[in-house]
Image (cartoon, rainbow over all chains, first blue to last red; front, side, top):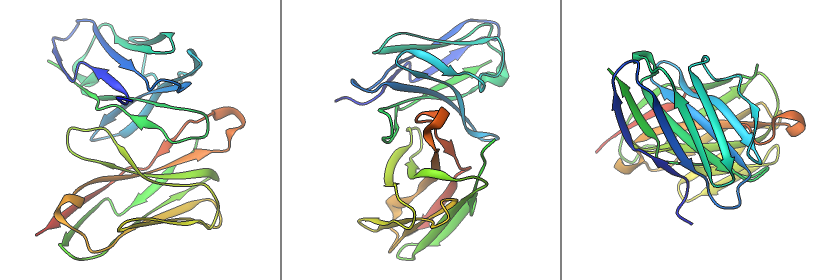
Length: 112
Length: 114
């Protein structure tokens, strides 16, 4: 298996633009997590899905953030409109129930 | 909510020295995991612990799941330059409502001087 695949690896955008981050989980994994990593706050869970259904989105910072999982092999995290304080590394991770989470390589987002 | 306190925040050691870091929690976890993150990469799992009191080794790494279920430590013996990175502990709570959700510690930045 290729592991969790995220795209793009790097994204630079202007404030106010829409940003879409993509994730392909490991085949057979039924949990998918979106994390954000910053120096100040470390790794924060934004939202997670089980069987494509959002279970807990309490970590989503505000309404500008939205996430979808239309099928078992694809998820998106969208920020609209983006702001400089959204600059961070965004990780996607997947797992089967009660097993270890595997992380993608992350998307480094810079909003200028 | 659950919180994990990881210490130390950073360590500067000489090659060949042993390293120890730990995490404590305000609540009970079913699983403790230790991850390492290299620059520009995602966290990679090092060791997983599933039972209170469990002691597990993976090469030069040894980790233990505390008997109270509220703490864990990671030891690295005979450190080498490639051990440099950020080490995270992560706890998985009882599964009543949280599924496989993980709570992460703040990380320990390890620097190894040759």
